[in-house]
Length: 413
Image (cartoon, rainbow, N blue to C red; front, top):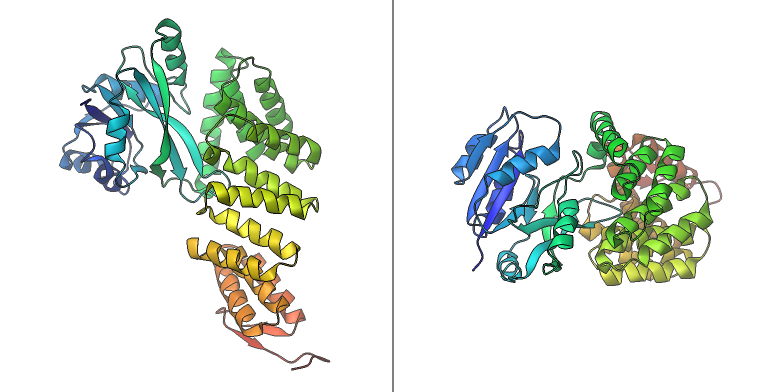
């Protein structure tokens, strides 16, 4: 049976590391952890799990740090995780069977982004044979893919496999973290330096182009992503990313036809369907905004056919059903979205709208009260807007989120 090493780089991950190491301790034969300057209990925690721990200075290069960690690995196969990631329960034996293939060089793993509202899955090259020429490249978004292609050109007998199930759960997805100005600037500088040395690199064009869009630099973002698409023989995952992010870019600029084109091109890429949920979901939202309710309905049904647990898919299908007057079906999907994510304020709010349309006032007020309470925690302006709208309808909500009705002139009770 092939042996397996866990390989990690960490810094100040005391809060996350135990959950990560718990998920792999019965799967791997060795744990190698390289620390880049922790000041908390990270090193002690790693050692308590039996990991071999090394310390290096941080030089702002993720690839260099990961390659240092690779130098200390001794087993036949390598599993790379970050501290805010963990293996899916019970997946270990299946991974063991996957690496038993003597002809396999890399097993690409599906990672679920916990908390993501648009693209909940990604494909990552995190399980690979300890080959002397496999190493990480790119100082930001470090990955082995470039070196994999070099090895395959020289040693074509190797195969790459895609593991079909979700294998990694990533807890680190937070919109506020991604939007952090310091992190965004560090990423921008690292990727700009890389592009200076590798002009037109399609993956870098995709990542930096999307970052430019987030930083409100649409002209730069679109130009970069369009440049990336000009590369011949694009790998499907990179082509998908470019089309997907261009769809978002053109949607923001209200260039509807271009946005729809790029979402459709993204969907056409030969990838696992779950990896294309973001493009399907955004296309459905675009169809709905254009008044194509039937098209949106079909697209969101496709989304839930791919992943019945996709919370945003249930919410969006509820919106499409509400637009068609299918209120009872809309309620079912709003409730499912709330079951999957109890703090989904918009789902509570639109559930309240549908209940009022059906004349179910108590149920509607209960849903609105929950929506207001959630909005008050995250978006007080939206909470106030909703309260004012309900006041105009004759309903009064107290600041605690509880509700009561008040009689309105001409209103039948």
